[in-house]
Length: 101
Image 1 (cartoon, rainbow, N blue to C red):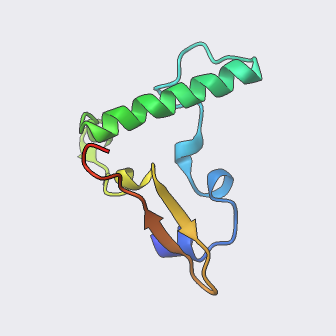
Image 2 (image 1 turned 45 degrees about the vertical axis):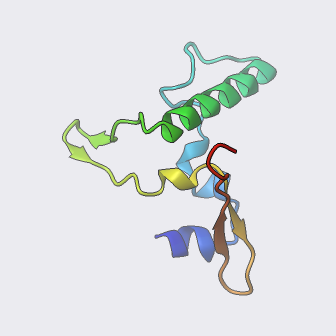
């Protein structure tokens, strides 16, 4: 899936592949904002909150119908990972800050 959807595709990931870039997720404050600036600020806030949960290992597994856990292996790649263009297939590169840095 990663190779096909992310590394060989030439389409924009945020709009065509990545479900992480939605402002209708549960972390976004309700009601949904209509002012674009407030909506963008709220999205940034929610992303930073999610990143903090991720870095402190405080994310509960997402479950289908409350029972079957989904694979969360890709979550650490949500922040700090970029797709470096290649001739036929791109490469994922992840930046990891040094401990304490």
